[in-house]
Length: 343
Ligand SMILES: [Zn+2]
Ligand SMILES: [Zn+2]
Image 1 (tube, protein in one colour):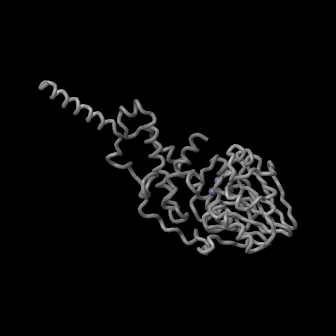
Image 2 (cartoon, helix red, strand yellow):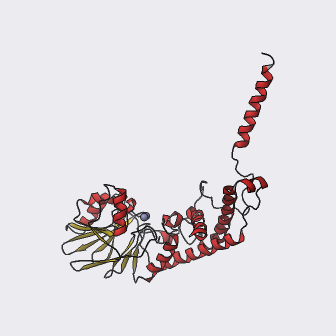
Image 3 (cartoon, helix red, strand yellow):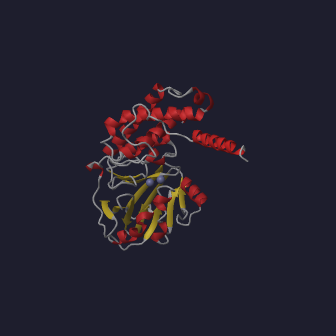
């Protein structure tokens, strides 16, 4: 018995040592030139202030929504985070999108303006956060969407998102009474089936999840399905002769100046990521063992250093020009460098 005791102690010590060295350890020192803005997964303790120009008119907290007349019977309805529209014509109302956060307020909002029935619902695209409040409108006789949206909705099989009754491929002109809405499809960008909804008399364009007036786009180009398509579609938006842009998010509508500013940011981002990819070397600063046996680690370390350079290049120009620059700049640089490498 006595001779076994020291052996047990040795075995325990060996096991403990093995466990300690198998644990991943954060770097003793951060990467060189680490930005002040907290990276993905790290808590931000102090956010950059939201510029005045990114803010919109206040919401009446008792109502929970705000109406904004866009001209000739067309209205924006918003909770200052999501945006949708409705258009009143001689014998009814056309609703465009039904975001769940304020879906229950859409009918009361319409009733502030008219008693006419809702005859049409248009889906901008299939995502539930913009249309899954459809049932709050009651049974709508005609639901219009692009064909890809119907395909995706049939796949998703969600009772909160009833299937379109009318679909189109490239263009659809909705004429109701004296009102007109021109729907058009400009290929995949945010999502297949995401359309432009243009009201020519009101010079208003609604395109959802593409332009964020005054704000940094939501993370990863607003989770764009196709990033080169997203860049191309920004130029399509620029060509439309609108006065008012309804982007589906944030607290205010947009203008051509907002589109131009977002395109300028996207161009700077692309240039910064391309430059960083070109001037960064994989494997630099890593030990020989890791370099030889762990290509995932080599690549992860390389991309981190590319993205750090991308963030550092953009920060002086953009940190005060787009609200929430600090919240999503790391995401945008990670998405941009990946798109440049593989698309
Ligand atoms: Zn979406
Ligand atoms: Zn959205």
